[in-house]
Image (cartoon, rainbow, N blue to C red; front, side, top):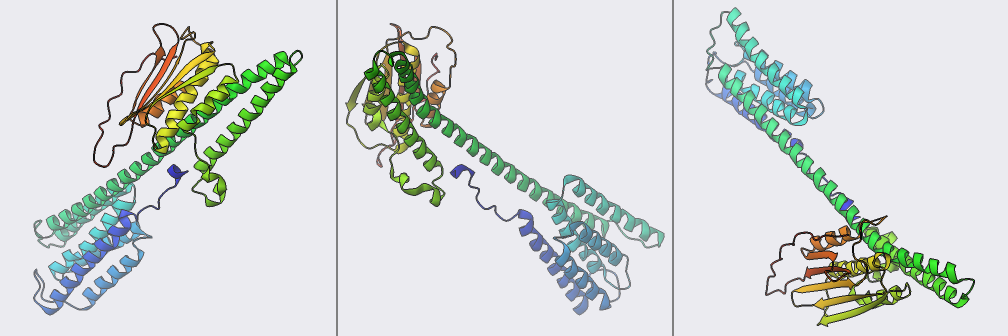
Length: 412
């Protein structure tokens, strides 16, 4: 079914973020190396020995290759390399020692994006511990390092990277949850639609078959002609029900080109079938009077089907519960609305009935999906009334405002 057909998922945010952050850090590092090699360093130190910058670039390239598969290990490697380079005063200037923390920050951002919250917090804790360890080691070595010169920029860099990674992960989880919820809602809506369709299609036919079978069993010994008519009605109703089930199943499988076949050309039920419904109901002992008003015109398939199913279910309730031999079906074609009404003069609501189903619930759901109005309840003078008003699509030059649904009437 269409609702369950999952669209291919978009590329993960982490997969797009990883190369961008990593190459941004590597680019900044290369620029820093070039400035250190070709010009004067920004910080302390008396020059640059070439093996140090080349080793830093090599570590970054190795990290770029391994980060996706081993994010934790690569983050640890880059953080350790950054700490080692920060402690190597004689090989690298201050700007390069601090700049090498950029790839570590990019790795931290990616790690937080793709791993759980516990691992993300541990990674942040390790970063804080490393920077604190750097301060302790430098103090023991007698090096006077000002916090504003090294520690604050490094800490802000790591905290900023961690925050970006956390935001990306939360956004990705929220998007995944929204997709899952939308899929579940679509599946639930499709199940309800199938349940309504099968109920409305089968309940009427099974009710007629049950009545005809009862009639045939009672008269088969004394009135064989009547029994034969009852069996013929059962056969016709069964064939029509089977054909309807086939159309429904084919419609549900129409995404499968091999399961559709030529049956797809068969029209679904609509208001044109009301007279045929009346004839079938008459064989069950209930005469259906059909009254139409207004100018008939083509309607959208969903409105046609819903209107017919409402009439069908209401007539089925008359056959099964009303205890009367007559009901009236009214179909009104308006310019902006389609109205259907089924009225009987039977028992109405006399109390809880065994085996009460979901007919009225399904009718109300159908009308609500089309933004219409629905009423069902006993009539003041006796009997029962079911009425639905469905808004019709507006022409291209006008707009029809849907009316609010009324309060639910008492239903049986």
